[in-house]
Amino acid sequence: MNAPQEREEQLVLELLDAVGRKNDVSQRHLARHMGVALGLANSYLKRCIRKGFIKITEAPANRYLYYLTPQGFAEKSRLTARYLVHSFSFYRQAGDSCDRVFAECRARGWKHLVLGGMSDLAEIASLRALDSEIEIIGTYDPHSERNRFVNKPVWHRIEDILPHDGLMLTDLNATRLAHEHLLAIMPRERILVPDILRLE
Image (cartoon, rainbow, N blue to C red; front, side, top):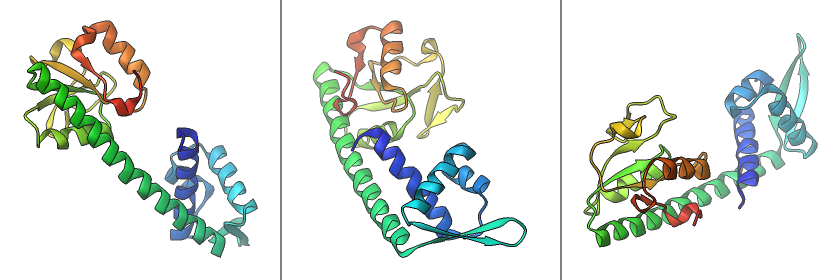
């Protein structure tokens, strides 16, 4: 599944979930729940009404009540199952990809690795590292305000990182830009890119 389609399905699922929990929600509440602008939430709401997933009725004081239709419940179930399958599939693929990076580290004699970007991939790498001889010493993320991630330090400047053998790219938000940034500040041979990122 491609990323835009995945994002669209996730937003529809968030909308159906919010309406399924409470039928007297405002569009502003729906937008907050979905994490999008009010106009975009309104657009998704209208689309779900047109598709027959949501029924709308007018309530007193210019308010509206939203209800999931039987088709809406079915679509919510379908999207939930699809999301879970995708999540488990990603976890498995990402874990295998991290294991291949750790095998490369062992082949190079590396023991201490830094993660490049806080993400689900970084969490999976941290967990998989517990079963390998590779130690994750922390995460380099110049865009984060956090100082800890998975109980390890987060560095915002490359010069603050503790001594390490290499860095594993784990940024999922702007992967290509993060890779280009790393190439500009450290030698290419010290940057490992998991194949799940499909950069190389």
